[in-house]
Image (tube, rainbow, N blue to C red; front, side, top):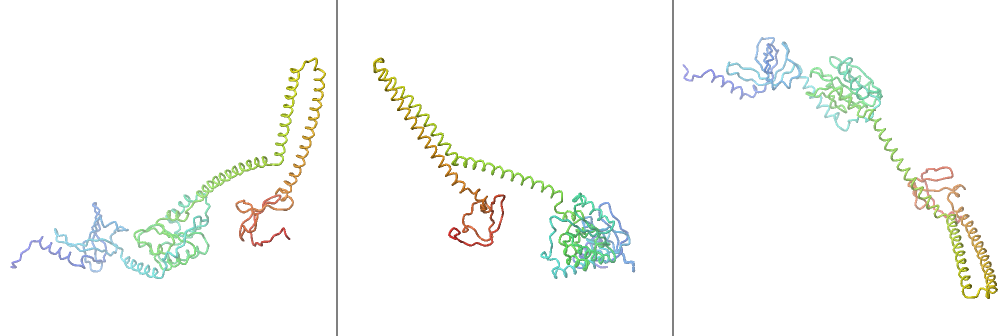
Length: 456
């Protein structure tokens, strides 16, 4: 008998530790057929892997925490590749495969092909940002490539109703199989035909799906068709776990058909209409403010022009002369009354009656002569003033820019309505305004020649 005697638990623990130290058994992928599959209420999945040819079996488990990485449900008879570590259930002395990922058989090879294709095309520069095209802010035409009668087609149409309820955008649908044999070639051909239509933007998409149903969008012909297209392309394959290669070549990536419609119709026509209404109101307000400022300025200029006009100056001088004449008459009247009172007080009325009468007669004659002289001087002054007014009016008429403009001349100003009086203030390319008798002409200076035209 062997002196080293161990308990069942000790041996099971020893084997468990041996498995834990083995690098191969800690990360191994095993191919087999699923049988005795049990989805436990705890969230764990218990199943058995079986070799169909030999009948060999192995227990396996996937803990609830690892199920988040699975995108399909296990079924009896599924041929899979299970990856994980071998562990010993020491209570029963059984070993089992604790899986972290289960893939349908053949999917692993496809993932490897996808990786190699992505690396190849990336090295060629097909994914460079420099080749990405921008989606126009406002589009008039949109192309959509998807499966006929698919759920994605319905999502696309519902998205269009939300973003473009008025139907302002012309949408062209083109259908192709999204999976299965020949799907990749059909999708690539649809992309080339849609690109030939010269649309503003294009969406290629099908919505989500299991990894094994999306391989058409990892096809090299499809990816190169996307890269070669002149139309900006939005990819809407919608699979976040494994990004298909088409997403790297597309100009924009969208997770779902609805998001793709939002990325294609960046600004809706209702938004454009609202912005135009706001802009119209802003421009109208600015114009009204400017018109009001010009009206106030015109009123001020009119008042100043009237104040400084020769006619007004003549009126002011005439009023001044009339005021002086009235003051002179009043003064003469007061003086005459004073003389009369003084004479009456200093002489006997009877004795000086004759002398006073004579003096009054003489004074009256003097006053009459003075009044006649004043009238003559006033008439002469008024005549001189009228003559000066005519001369000034003639000068004003001859100097008036309105008269000159009516005679064929033009009033020239720059783009800020400032007067231009010399060619030295101009340069070729400047914008000028020329006011003629019946309108204003905008012009651009093409050449300049300095010349004294008054000595010609």
